[in-house]
Image (tube, rainbow, N blue to C red):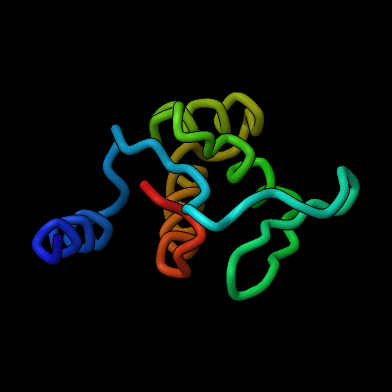
Length: 103
């Protein structure tokens, strides 16, 4: 298992694999209200809004990272596609490091 973790860590250092399917990690779930959504995790809760909410809502374990980026590009038509990919990568990597999201 340790070897698998190291491979994943190397992939993350190079960016998120295009075919990975991000989803909330075990022990994490949606909470709050429709007006004020939260992600609940064992150590606490995180308020999610704006672009972060748009990204995280697409992380259902069915869509690949590529699918998520393509959907975000449709939602934010006119925004720089490279910037959308970079921002989504950074956000998802941060949630993965906090063990809120699994790939």
